[in-house]
Image (cartoon, rainbow, N blue to C red):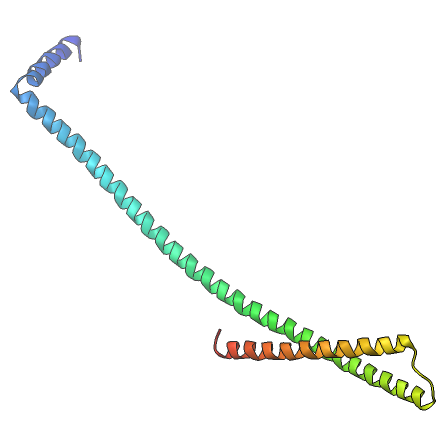
Length: 160
């Protein structure tokens, strides 16, 4: 367009925009701008709501998955603990049995010496006493482990 046409358009627009019609045009343009902004805001809110719903769904799935894995880990941990506990108890029982046999042999040896008129050495008597104390300790520990195992077995049967 040439300059004259532009000039005519500018004059026509300025006449339109300065008269009573101008208020309506400005109101209409303002309405259209605000309407578009409102539509864009609503669209953003819809997208945000969808994303929030998706995040909540994923969080719920992950929480369920994590809880399931933790439950499985807890069951596995209990099984491992039971196996380790069982192995330790067997080991302690073996030590108790061996110590008991050794203690019995020591007492027999002392008795044989005494029959022959000999007294046991102080070191032998100290070892016999230490062995007797160790037997008592092992007996108490095994009794405690037995009580603990009964409680674990009952908890497992109860589902806990």
